[in-house]
Image 1: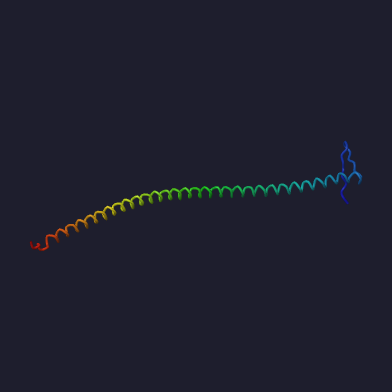
Image 2: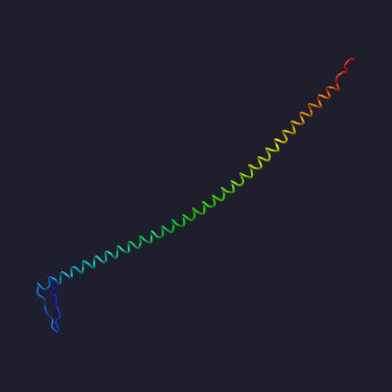
Length: 132
């Protein structure tokens, strides 16, 4: 049996009857349920706070990684630009060499023509004279 609940009236104490104790006990039980529920909510709030902190840490890690990747992309873009510039320089140089080779080929052709002319003249001088 539950202990009697005593209520102080003035200076005297009165013992409540069973009928009077029931509503008071129901309120006490409900207070205990609410207290348990509050504790559960506090625990859940703490879990959520911990998870939020974990997520914040992860977000910061992802931000750092994104920044690293952006920096690397910039480095690669710069390197690609350098390579493009170098390709352009080499292409220009190849064109210059090609032009020079064509000039040399033209000059070789001129020399061949001149050698042929000289050979024809030499042959003309080396022929025996015609009888007149």
